[in-house]
Image (cartoon, rainbow, N blue to C red; front, side, top):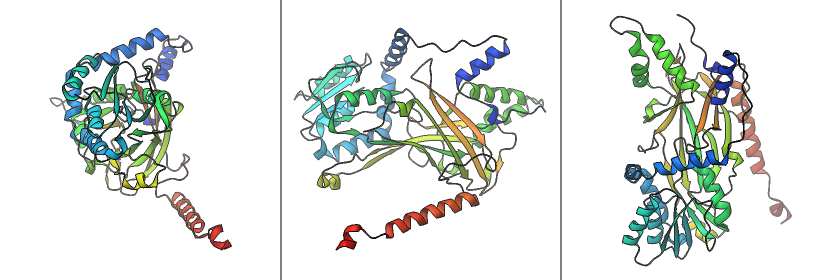
Length: 407
């Protein structure tokens, strides 16, 4: 059987694939040109028009972990919202705006860029006799408000957190509309990754092709996986916690009050992890969580605040975000407990469609490739370094405070 390419040979960023194709055809690839504003506007128009579909809003409302998390975070902390000016940066059906009104907000600007804004106005008229909520049709980062707001509430997250690039819009809206001491709801977000075993998926997409009426058609499975990788197309699946074969690692994390645009355009991180049980390494799963736990300078407010987490991981109740999986096409997927595996994941905002990201995955050699510092794997050198860092932290904590010494 011909050798299937090692994952290290796959580059999932579309731009790179175009260069390879042009080289194969004997042509040179022209340098990338700046995207015309008209093209950006077309992409945005298509994107926002897609949210005029009622079924999308129904799907999100029926996502109980999602909607419950926002309701609990807002209503359980009504003292934070009482008498405040709020912007709902992606209002949709207005459910978050209505939660904010119920919590006692003085004014809520429900901003919706899609044509669904017309229905949103009707919903608000039925549920807001006091006139607290004002519907504004437009992009949150482009509209003008008569005043800055105390709180920005928004449900902007896409698959693996960043898909759809709504975080870009949120950052721009924050810079334009939020007061200096304002807060973000949610306040923090993290992306996680872990090695995963997917027996049913591999049976359906790979093993199936090994025996078709007695004939081996495995090259079809190889082609399917290669096409997904070359196009940067991950799988969106509901995984079980039992399918994880490594402890989750943090890929990146954001404080949404301070994150900047350059931090979300292009991301890269390498990880080495220890396998937690004998199994098969079929892919790397990616998911996120969001925390409603803003930083308050008023200690009394901070103590009373009830933190809430929205978790989209395999160990949490299923959400419409599911988990994103980049499949690892390896001839030998078997791994043993305590074996070290490594990878480098990249997320690059697409040049052709800024609403999408190209995901990249490359396998690393634990013996030859450089490990990050600190590293979570259990190789001797990493474990030793981690122990030394922990000892240094412990020693630092034992150093007496200058004020204590002087007294």
